Length: 190
Image (cartoon, rainbow, N blue to C red; front, side, top):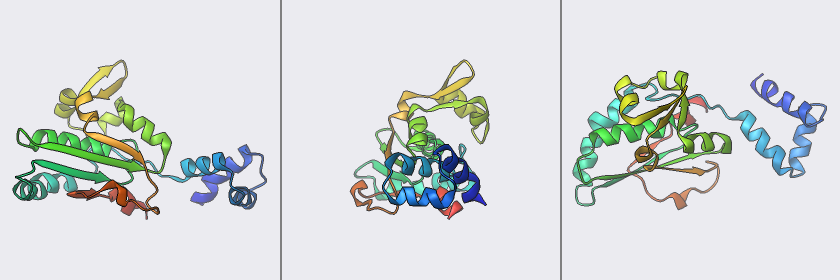
């Protein structure tokens, strides 16, 4: 049902009779159609501090241990796989900004397959509805600037996150090593 509901309208928009014809066109190497299928099939449900417990665990258990282990280099690297529109990596950036001692540096690499959601994430602009989902009011006031009906995350936090397009089925060793890997948005749906 999910495949049909997302791909049948795309097939019709491309002038194709159905999903079978869409698959044949994809096999012929239609690059734009491949991008359109990826955008249609990805689930981009996310919100700030989603499920709260993993973020509490990072703050209360994982981070204190890493501060001891990484004390001589004073830096942390975190990877958010399937970062969607950026709420997860920005939630981690807020957590780190509040919890890291002075002199520490944090780098967050956020990847997703969808170019559309990566562009939104890079801009860091969210609607009133999006910032009301899971984001504590003190974080909204501290880390966002309001512009009309929209809220933009601070340049300081945006600079902590590097967004990259990545298919998790491909080799990702070029990303380097990480202290923490969040792949929750992958595991939830697959």
